[in-house]
Amino acid sequence: MKLSRPATKHPQHMKSEIVCNVAVIGAGTMGAGIAQVFAQSGCPVTLIDIDSAVLKKAQERIKSSVNAMCQGANIRTGLEDNIYYSKGVLAKSNAQLVERMVRLAREIGREIATVDEAREMMGIAS
Image (cartoon, rainbow, N blue to C red; front, side, top):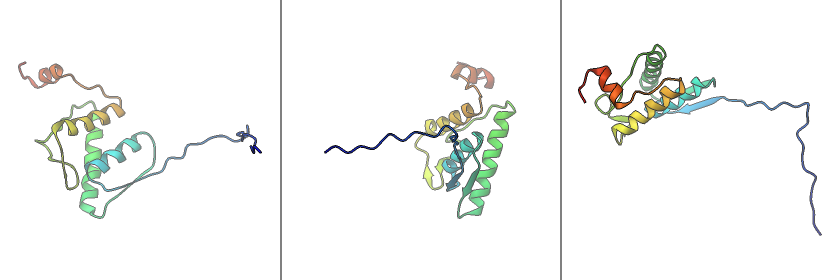
């Protein structure tokens, strides 16, 4: 005997709605970056950390980077600025830090400079 049930149809009068409420636990570099991306996409975000100093630093870092990029400023990142990817986690490479900032810049519609453009902006010969 074969049992089947009729396919469920979505009632026409019901509208689909995406609800986005995000909580990020851990306000280190990675947590702050995740919170920033969700906030930029319009989701309410709660950033949680047991260390209030880390939380404050994360909020300031997010605010500073986004404000700089939104105002058209160029930003830089790398191991010479910060050796940690997140709280207590050493960055594996400059590339790991740069990839995150590229992702964040693209999230707010900024173009990424090529190596030659960056050298020209900083007055460094090729």
